[in-house]
Image (tube, rainbow, N blue to C red; front, side, top):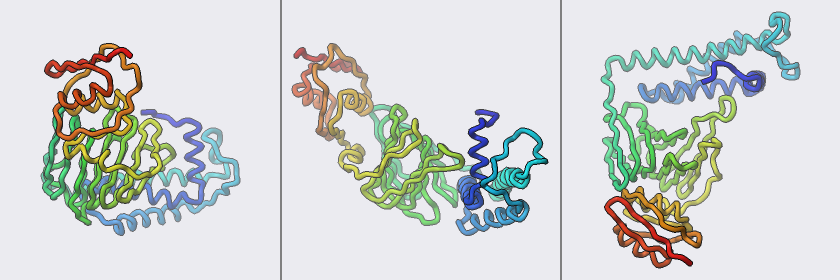
Length: 343
């Protein structure tokens, strides 16, 4: 982590503090951070949280009432600060930092006092190796269908404020509704928040894009990475909609409709492909059947396969594909060799 700011960082900070939306933004973002901190340890409703933030912001406004004309030249961090007309501006920055420190102090002591006498919940991790899928029944009534080469971590007993789980890989969630306890899935740089909903998350590490497909209810998908100063990106999905997120670009794709048979049927024992190339199909087979593929020769045409297999053995799947895709094959325990035929 850097221990210094670039000139661009300083300029963006200054422009934000001088902007008209500074006070509203500050209240919003500090409230969000405090809410995340408190959510795991103590119940606090939105009214209480916003009231706390508003009181401190109001006090900060009184303390830093010196105005700065936004049209003035942006002050820099060098030279004689005391001789600059933007002295109030620097008080404002100082107040901002103090506010952040104050909320951190509140979060620490507030949660410390309320959890001192509560035994720490035991964390449970469920992990599937390649070739294995499982169904997990949570104590709140929610059901998680965990795909192969995936894992999920959750507390044995959810606290009073929120139900938070961490996912790696792919899972389908059927969430029991509880208006007092939002269900939050943390996966990579994403937070998916729901009350009572069914949805699928595909977020394997080797893929650039993570995909969230909503079957019922509503979800809020949020990037926890920042592409701009203190700005988070949020997407709301309705049933039948999906969105993908690029971890490289820290950006969401446009919301679109999805094919339930393509995105959700894995939990029912189906492997479904739509215009899939060889690499995508082989990777899916390796994960599904816990095998490793090797190749002799190369296919003389590009695979563009559409079809599905329902609870079939790997032998049956490859026999079905071998004629149309022009290859022979040999299965030796967990090793599979494809021998492509010449044109």
